Image 1 (cartoon, rainbow, N blue to C red):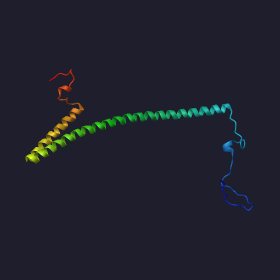
Image 2 (image 1 turned 30 degrees about the vertical axis):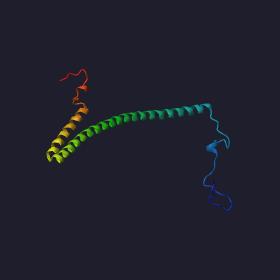
Image 3 (image 1 turned 180 degrees about the vertical axis):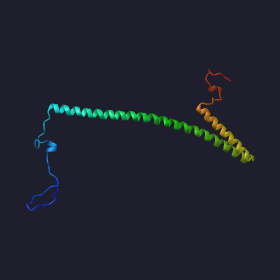
Image 4 (image 1 turned 120 degrees about the horizontal axis):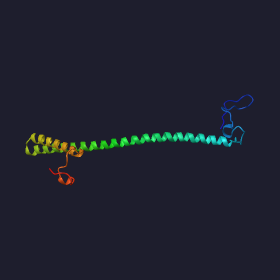
Amino acid sequence: MVRPTSKRAEGVVSAPFAYSPEPYFGSGGFGRKEENTVDDQEKNLEDRRNRLGDKLAGLKAKAGDDADKGASAAASRKGFGEAMKLSSEFLSAVIVGALLGYLLDRFAGTSPWGLIILLLLGFCAGVLNVLRAVGKVSSPHPADRSPGENKK
């Protein structure tokens, strides 16, 4: 829709832009297309192929970077999960030792010695659990050992 901006004395309406069919139908006039030669079409096709190849190469390089980032992120998540497991094992042993010591003191009337002793035992049990989980200390059960290990 064309809106008039002003009316002149002659009655001609001026538009804010001029209509031209050339961008859509070429310079040959309304309804006529410019005919490209076969050489022009092949050249345009080759240009499009080159641009597409460049875009694909850029996307492949970016995908390779994303794969490297994904692998390091997976390793980071695995390490974070292992740290959470170890810390929860340690804290649970300390909390259980403290709770048992408090209950012993409460019912036996040995305050504060039950709490102190069982808290220290809980701490030692937590450290031992962490060392076992990491693999620095072997399991105390002979059934867990492989048949080739020497028994001491």
